[in-house]
Length: 333
Picture 1 (cartoon, one colour):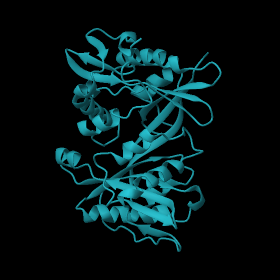
Picture 2 (cartoon, rainbow, N blue to C red):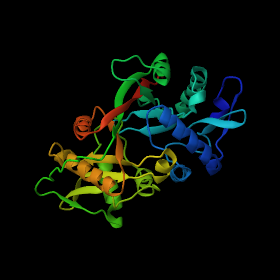
Picture 3 (cartoon, one colour):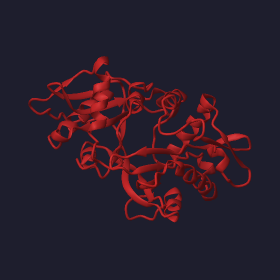
Picture 4 (tube, rainbow, N blue to C red):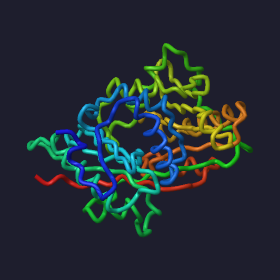
């Protein structure tokens, strides 16, 4: 059964199946508006949507993506996904970016009801399963609003917190030393996969980890904004021990009138944490962005990161912009 056929929506809204790349311009615009309204600044382009949707392996595009229209205009879409976590849990994620003007409780519950029902096809009676969904949140110990509040009405509980941070200028970047025995080298094309694989492996044992697939690696390597000349990669011999992979979204900068760089995909090998490597690489990344003419930088961080990443980034001049929570709810048999 197609996801679109499960959707019961408020009057004036209708659901239809996803039409492939023809829908990507509208979907990219919706995701960009939704992200901006919910605290995530990155603009999504059609080329990025084309790249990501050409490698999907966590859903079936023929059955699992629905587009929602209002007065014949696309105003939302939903793509429920599944993942098998290394602890054996099946994680079923509800994802439904919606134009801010249409982000309302009745529509939210209509989409989520259908997505949860549709996701049940991946539930195996022999293994635990849980629903999950991201939502902006005002912050710890504050009353949830909008999607966060609606998820809590449905019995979801806040599981993991993350934050969007911004460094408002690229002045006074500290010169932090790389520890002895560690070498920073320019990334070469033949090393890209090794570097990305090493990044994914750094998160083994942390919340929500599932075995990476070729799709996970390809999404980074084939990203239209990938610029390995900005990457800061630390090695101990032939082992990648830490990395920061900055990029510049020139389309976003042109559209919004600022000069912003992203210092994302930050990771450190478990055996090399708390030695100052990531901080030194991040400082180098900020200088690299400044050398390209950027005047500010942003990044996202898991505030529960066991390596103290949130504290590291704020010490380096990043300021809190917004919180996001990953909510979960056990699937009842």
